[in-house]
Length: 139
Image (cartoon, rainbow, N blue to C red):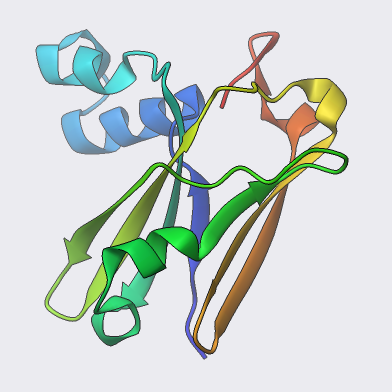
């Protein structure tokens, strides 16, 4: 059994934590920190990993097609792009870019990230009310 993390990468609190871990407590004021914290307006970014490389070798289109975001009563959202970032020699984290064409709201209650490729079938639900930050839904 492998341990996987599914993270809403484009959420402001996640980006702030990444800046602090990479650049220190004052990193948000640096040029690199400001670039990381800049609002992502075109896509929701969900990261998924760390996956063994052999699980994701092959066709990038098949990996992209294996993921979706679902909200009850709405059509699933499919990613427009996927990128892989190596984590050492044998694993990678995948970054899925989902379009914000029909923005999610707190009224949607929850959104589910799903990834199904070969024998790997992962589902992770996010409660949108828990993703409020400073009075705003941060996705």
